[in-house]
Amino acid sequence: MISKVVVFSIRTLAPTLVLSIVLSSGCATGQRKVALRDRLDSLIGQPIDEAVKLWGAPDATHQMNDGAVAYSWRQPWTSSGVNYAVPGGAVVTHQHLCRTTIQTDSSGVIRSYHCEDCGTSC
Image (cartoon, rainbow, N blue to C red; front, side):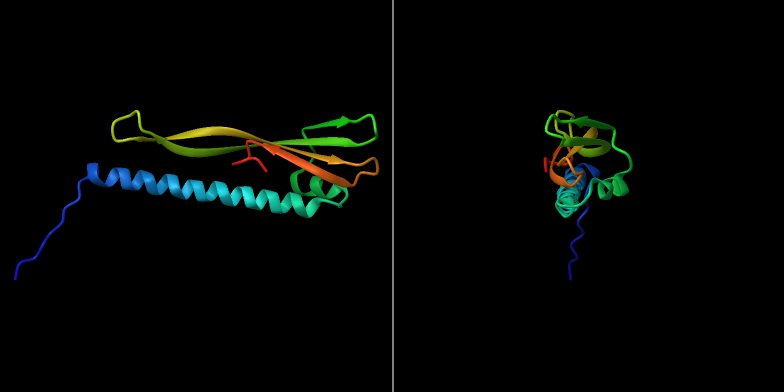
């Protein structure tokens, strides 16, 4: 009986490993987007204090002419990808700054939100 032995070299496995890392990080980014959107959706109609309980004091506030207030938070996060310009590819990381803005009405009740660079926009 003849047995077949398959030998994989690092050169053969490296692209598969890198692709696995990229796909998993993509899933994490998608999960991050859903979790953030769900959390923000749950805040609509709630007092702004509920957002402050979750994230702490905002990094900035802006009083609107109609009495509404915009509150902004910044949260750093890291993503990774593959640089195919390097032979065999190379995993690279990217630093991001998620900016979440929540707008309240004049009585401090959350009415809307907007986010940028938070995995994908909300």
